[in-house]
Structures are given as structure tokens and as C-alpha cells.
Image 1 (cartoon, rainbow, N blue to C red):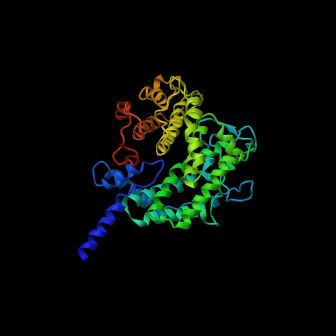
Image 2: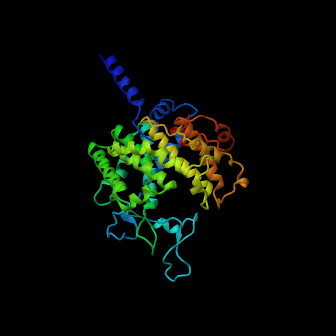
Image 3: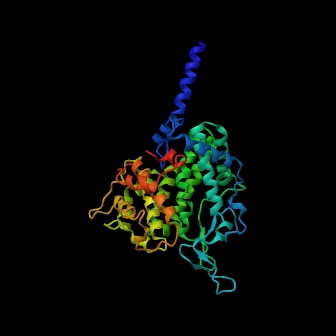
Length: 395
């Protein structure tokens, strides 16, 4: 009897260890495969990096929306507030107002608002949830659950489900639809929440509360002035809006909204932004033209990863005149390692965007594309063996 009990418990542990998580952006089967093979040379260095970062996250002091110095026009610090990233005080005005645009140059005043604390919280939750999933150590998942409770559920510290005051411009506006891109990392956060729920680190009431928060936030995306403004934006902001809307809708149970957005995505976003030669005119007009062209592509790839789980093929969608994700990738990869031949502006950041584009090449292959760009990736964008990216998207 004792031997049978041991065999049963061992079988239960193995089954739990290899359970396929129900994620949207991340491939659950990939996560399962990595977890089973963590001790291999392919994944061990990245796993060890993840655990080191999770240990750091356990000690971090995370801020909430209540910690910002300035109160939004609503009178409630529970409302998220951020500054337009490329707007600066006007040096010709005594008070600097209204602020003026310096495209591509980030204003350090950003740190005074909610964007940085929000990103730190999400990075912490994602890191801790992955450490919990791969290690099985509850201390990571429990810490992530506390962070989520503090940011979204605790009446004393929670964020209201709106972005009415995101990317405000002093002297011009209290908030803008453009500010919705601030919470693009909700796309990965919702997968982290799923992992925590499936591991039992989130109580049913916490999970229900988070779903309700995102239900209300999805309604805000659809119905608010800022949400409607962003939904009709034609560049990377419109693409990012669709991906974020889809992720939040799927998480909160608004599946009809998500499916409609995914099915319309290729025609509504990709084919209108990408030319037959693969160029993206709206992004090429920026002072960081390569960066924003790549940035828009990352959103398309994220939508492809999500849509794949729902029978919608974004990777291989092609318009009648040849517009496609593949064409956009081809246009950009032609310039990897040839930045002197780039005809448009890129005022800084070449090394960073080339490396990140190379990771996207591997990522797109992992969600259904081919390996035609592997040569460029291997030459110019070798992924370090301790990069956590390998736990999520490497083939």
C-alpha cells in the first residue's frame, strides 16, 4: 500500500510538473517543454538568470499609483498619470508651458509619474510568475500575487481601470489616446496572471477581482474618448491598441471582442501600414525610423502569437498586392549591419534595435513563420545562453 501511494504521488507531481499552461502570448507547449528540460545546457543558464532576477524582485520596493507627487485633474491619485515622453518645457517661456515636442528625446521628468512604477511592477510579476512556474517554489508566486493585489485590488493603493491622464502634456492636454501604449505590457501581464492562477498562488477571489478589473478596463478601451481616439490611429499606436485590446478582452471573457479584432487585424492594420515593398511610411517619417518600423513589427508578431491559438493566421496573411509581415521583416533585415545605407533618420540606438529585431526574427519563426532570416539573426543577433528570452520563444 505504501509503495502504491508513493507511485501515485510521484505520478501526480510529474503530471503537475509537465502540465501545459493556458497562455495567450506565450506558447504554453513551449513553456512545458522548457520546464521538462530545464537541466539541459540549452535552458539552464537562462533559468539561473531568471531565478537570480526573481530573488532580486523579492527584495524590491515597488511603488503604486498613490506614490506619485502630482495628483491628476480628477483629484484622485488612484487614476494613472504619465507624461508625454518626447515633450519638454519650452525654454523660451518662464514657466515652460506649453511643453514642446522633441521627437525621439525622452524627458527625464517621466520618472515622477506612474509609467515607471507600473513597468517595474509588471516586470516583477512576470519574473516572479515565471520563476514560480519553472521552479515550483511558492515564494515567487506568492510575492507576485501580493504585487497584483497591491496594484489592482487593494482599495488603499489600487489603480482605477482607466488611462484618462496617460501621456499628458502640460499646457496642452490632461491626457491622450496615445497614452494607451503605456500599458502595452498588460499583454504579457495577463499571461503571468494565468500562470499564477493555475499554480494556485492566486485565490479564486483574487483571480475574479483581476478579471473584473480588466473587464472594466476593456470597456474603457472601447468606450472612452481616449480609447476611441487610439483605435483609429494609423501607425504603431493603432497596432498596439488592437493587441492590447485583444489580450485584455480574452483575459476578461470578452471573447467576441477579441475574435473580431484578430480577424480584422491583417486588413485593418497590416495591409494599411505596410507597403508592397515592406516599408512602413508612417514609421519612416520619425526621427527613430528604424526603431519605430521594428517596434510596429513587434506588435504584429505579438498579435500573430495570440491569434495562432484561435485559428487566425497573421504570420502568413498577404494582401492582393503583396503586403505582409514577411515583407516588413525583409525590408528591415536588409539593413542589419548596413546602417550607413539607411536612408531615413535614426538619431540613436542602432545597436539595440538591431539586436532586438534579431530576437523578433526567432520569435516570428516560433509562432509559425519560416527560418529564412536565420542567417542574419545568427550573424548579428546571437542570443546569449543566459537570456530569459530562450525560456519563452526560442525554437
